[in-house]
Image: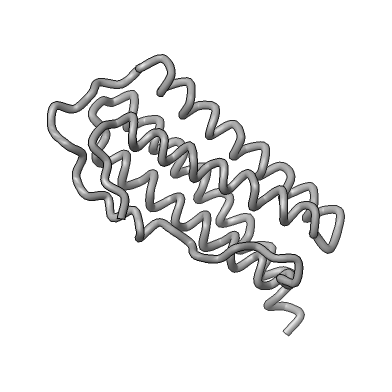
Length: 151
């Protein structure tokens, strides 16, 4: 399990996770079964690019105080989804993975908000958590409309 000693470590981890989300949604867009979902996946990929850029800007500008003590155990393994997208993944599997990724991202940002050393960082992480929960809802609606109703 990864150990974080500084807020910089946390921000780098979050940026890495956002890049994984960018790559994941780009993969899903490339393999989408219809144009509407391709557009949704491409849009989510671009939103994740924006999340990463926000985190990078704060990290580069040092807009956060460095805590004097180490960062509490955030149980980062709890926020990992151990599934690699593959070309044989069907639409239902892709939606389930996407929902789980967004749920994990929401939990990560919610927990980071609780541990944030400043109000600015807390607001950033709360904002990112909200965006991730909206993504999850979008995939849940898509799952309901196109998987549950087909069965």
